[in-house]
Length: 118
Image (cartoon, rainbow, N blue to C red; front, side, top):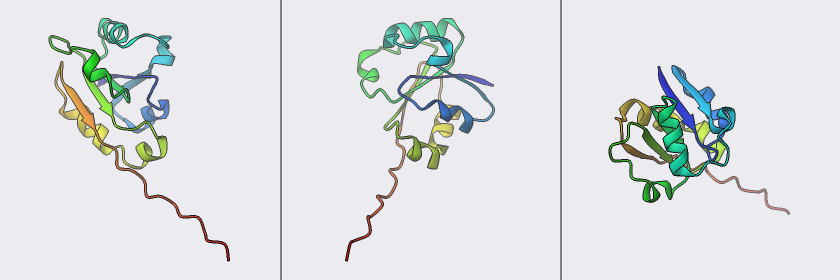
């Protein structure tokens, strides 16, 4: 079982879609407001193996070389899109190796058209 941390930028409901993994949120851990470097260090110290975030800039702000933590970055935090297509996230979790960075693209939902008024 993999220990996964959901960053504040990711809907906490994602935890229900990741069976077989022990998934916790930063809010649950009491780590709300921690900056990225501090969050990564704390997560590693607590034994987390994966951090899932939607913070696109984290890749450029943090050097993951020599880190045990796996960083998975989602291209959206829009819950309906994540809920509809979460399988790429599961695949990234299964394929990831310590110190790795994975970017996961969640397909966008089709736009609903408003009915035209007569």
